[in-house]
Length: 104
Image (tube, helix red, strand yellow):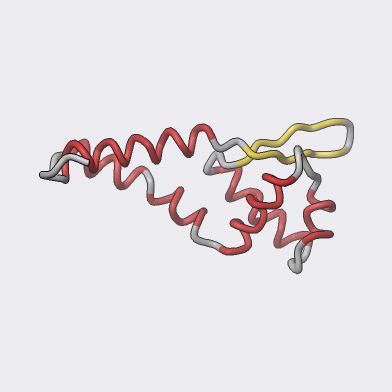
């Protein structure tokens, strides 16, 4: 396996770690159902505390799975999956072209 393939795999590790947590999965699915939500609104739907929700949102922000918009004193979170999807597509392309002997 070439260096580029290894780099592509390794660049996806933080994304996989972010997506592996069920609380973050729940937040992603919740945001998929709503245009945008505040931390307090997300907390109303979740069983976690507000600080725990904020922690998970920080991880989702760092991995560009959500984005935040400040309006007055409120911070609104919404899904921003395009960068993550592009990263996963690059990984799939790398696997198909570098790692697999058979074509799909």
